[in-house]
Image (cartoon, rainbow, N blue to C red):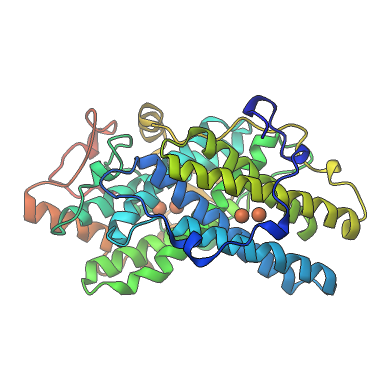
Length: 412
Ligand SMILES: [Fe+2]
Ligand SMILES: [Fe+2]
Ligand SMILES: [Fe+2]
Ligand SMILES: [Fe+2]
């Protein structure tokens, strides 16, 4: 295996496809201990689960659009492996970690992954788009943490995030609901983009899509109407986030090109996570999956040459971007909150909410969805009435003065 400085997935052979199939025991053998796991091991697991779900679903969608039986069969071969990888990764989450505890992990992913991508994004419009959505997931973390703090026998949100991520109001969830026309952005151009720009956006699309899928499926597991409502409401924001991120992708990327890019992206992420992983068993998993992805990439390149009738070098990144890292982003996020909390979206642009005209569709949509009770407000209201103040984990006072009062429910 090449070292990171010289890592070029296109030059590695990887594991042959016929050696990649694992048995049930291999797929279900390992679960971390929720009290001991490093928070960023949990976030890497949540991220790679989302990447593998995206890989499998992408190959299903592509197969449905593929008339050639040989290409369809080739997709079935690696798709089966993506599914096994997803099972092994997702299965690392232990059964005694509650859905709400895992949810705290999901929003920590959204916060620290998005912050890293924004900090390492050379394109100013893409960076702005990331910072914009970052503040929304940051607020989700706060709302779910307030819910968790009222449940008996669960971990504290601050110990789940390991005090590496602050928990306090961001852009209030109640203010995030916008008309669908304001969730579509300007697409990137693959031909001009830096390699890291392509990796960042693919990472965020898959991670947000997984969060959307997760909330789509777990909202009905609760009896508490506030908790059901919270997953429903935040699930609708994740729908906005997927619309937002996927509209940044280059729409001229064909199915075949995207197929190769997906394998390159998976290889890049597993390599990054393998290098930073502190849990030896998880590190082994990343190492094995990297080896598999390199095999997928080789196969995808060959398929592209055959069916795309060209060399993928024409569109592939010329160099491998530096590895993505899960790390604490506290100071950076405080600055973004201070400067951007009042932003909303108007078409493809990000503008202060008070600059919108009174008859803007934002206000009409807000009036429709927020009529009656708003679960993300109710949860904090309930926490304040039960415990005298909201739940937070902070290292300093909130950067926005009006959000410093812990006895008031934060709204726009
Ligand atoms: Fe995969
Ligand atoms: Fe979120
Ligand atoms: Fe999100
Ligand atoms: Fe793959």
